[in-house]
Length: 315
Image (cartoon, rainbow, N blue to C red; front, side, top):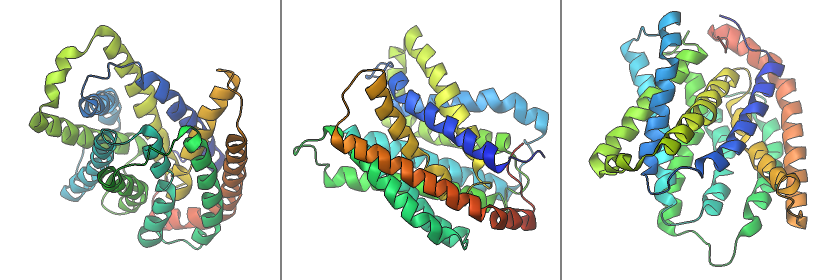
């Protein structure tokens, strides 16, 4: 199995951040009256079907009972996150959910400490706090006093954030045990397949499947685009980096997505930078640079641990 190098994993996550940033504009093109959970389930299912020939070619269809439960657990975490996000958006704004999401890398670090303890964990706390503070400044730029989220929205999306924070550490832990030897393609395929099945099953019970009749040719085009670039590519890059970079460092690249969106508004849409945005952008840059340096110094210990467990990330 071909390994993924340190620099390659970070460059891949840089591209991941760009794809995530670009996905928000593309998602806004889809008919908003269509059930979003149905759309997400279809996106995950389409991605799994695209990866199916590769999975068959690589022989990743062989599955133990423990592996089946492992993929089901990871798929359930994906379904919980997306389901909670869309439910919370019914009661609060995207700004508030975006602000809450800045806690996910820090929560990931907490789960990482329990599931895959590492001596370099303490080195990543301060850089992540700096980057998170900067991201909050960028996300909060348009908020007003009447945009505080409801307790229900916080509770629901809080569960989703916990699920997303658990996803990467649990994935790496399982890849050293019940999912040992499972490559990037196999991990991406099976996790997305189970996530899609859970979401589509929920739509079956909630009645969200009825909105499928509203899908137009344009919606299908944007759905395919989002599936390929905002879902398939990003999940593959995520699993490609997990194991080479610590899970908390991997998910911290979401802060760069926030920065890229802000830079797009500045240079492409010609919006004048605000003082709070400039400070936030600088904090994100400093925090991510410090995180990169700390992850570089921790790389030998991480690689030794991976070799000892018999797992190398990549395909």
